[in-house]
Length: 242
Image (tube, rainbow, N blue to C red; front, side, top):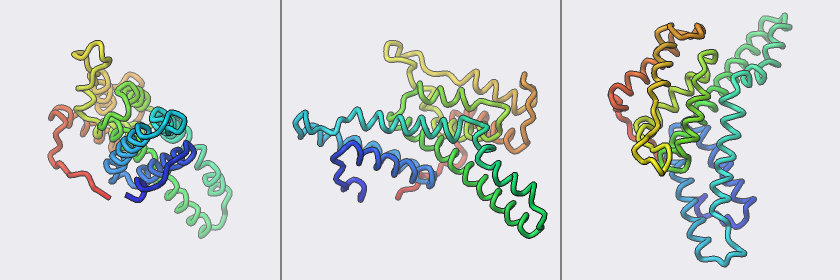
């Protein structure tokens, strides 16, 4: 409510609000549904304001959508899809650990490394969860989600496979019910090839032969089973609200 009440009367303020909401959504993934709905409400507010204003003073609804899309793509590219990004961020700490001779200091550095790894995983997971929630309320297109799915299906990166599982769990049946284009409403996106590849990775028969931990293989299998069950989880939890 506080964000809705803000006087967002310039594109700069609009950009700041989008960044604020996005950061909160990533940091609090359990509330991603609420933050996605907040974005939808903000768009409604901008649209209503534009309709009341003369053309020269309009906030421009398209600018809001473009700014949100740009932020989404930038976050996905920088913190999710580049599987070497995590190593680059953590390398300075890893180097310090290698050079450290003091056992106490080394233990402290290892604890810092573990915490930083947790933060990176949380951020990437929160990003794909929010992308999924934005798609579910039609603020991101099926084409964007399909591109994310295709990118995340990387057997050489367990982090990306984990994000893939989170994204698919979030978008579920809605994605497979989404038309590829408006001219062919009966032709929807298919996950057949994606699921087949996931099954190959989970069963260790993938053509790339990449080594994937049991934990991630179980995650992949859980998503495969969820789809077999028509995306109906055994425990349907209501989304948390702010």
